Image 1: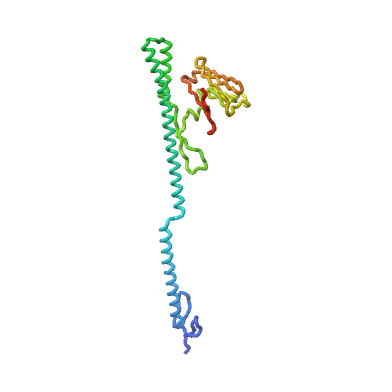
Image 2 (image 1 turned 120 degrees about the vertical axis):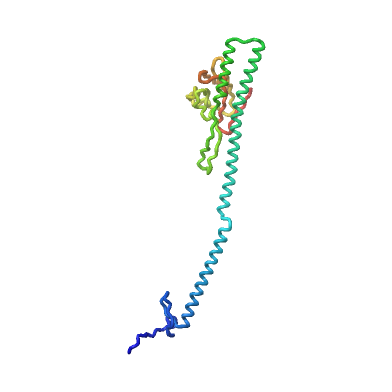
Amino acid sequence: MASGFINKTCMSCNVGLITAMCYECKKTFCTKHFVEHREELSQQMNNICQEHDILCRDLAHEFSTTHPLLAQINQWEQESTIKIQAAANAARIKLQQLLDRSKNSLDASTSKITKELESSRASNNYTEHVIKTWSDRLQELRTLLNHPTPIHIDYENNLESEIRLIKVTDESLTDLANSKSFYGWWDLAYYVVGGNKKKYDSTKTLRTGDELRFVLDCDNKQIILEHHRTNIILNLAIDIQLCVFPWKIIVLLLDKSSCVKILH
């Protein structure tokens, strides 16, 4: 009777008879090489465990140390904080200056009227016209007190800046050119009446060292500008319905290096 046993050799040595088979890799081994095969697998297992331990150690070390970008973030935070604090401090100072300016202006005007009233009342020297003038001036001061010049908080429009810093602005300056109470001159080329700018002559410009004489002619309700170098005399009639008393003189310097000097 024929036997169904087939004699096979070890796939490692091709000599020894097979005694075992690895069902994972489908290889057959003799006893010696089957043991070696298991030892190889054991060594691979040891290598994997060692690689795992090293990875865990490196992960723990990597996340326990400071990332280089963290220092950059901290520096940005410190620099930004300094800029924000400086902008906030400048805004506080500017706001207080605007409030003090408004208060001081009202105090000065009120003090002047107080002295006039006390003097006239003590000397019994006043008429209906004088009383009407004082009444109008008091009403103007009351209007200024109840409706002060608006103050706003704006944001710098700097596209290169990472932070939009705030600043305090006075509407009397930002909207001055559009105000109906604004009368005067831009350089010598333009004059402004009731906030509307109109052209004189573009060849007439101010130069460094020029001397000018500015006259407030309240009695005749006009302002006069005399330019000594060119001997030009300019005058503007004022509509006191739009530009009421007391008038304020404002000099706008568009260049930070510009300056004016009051001679007398």
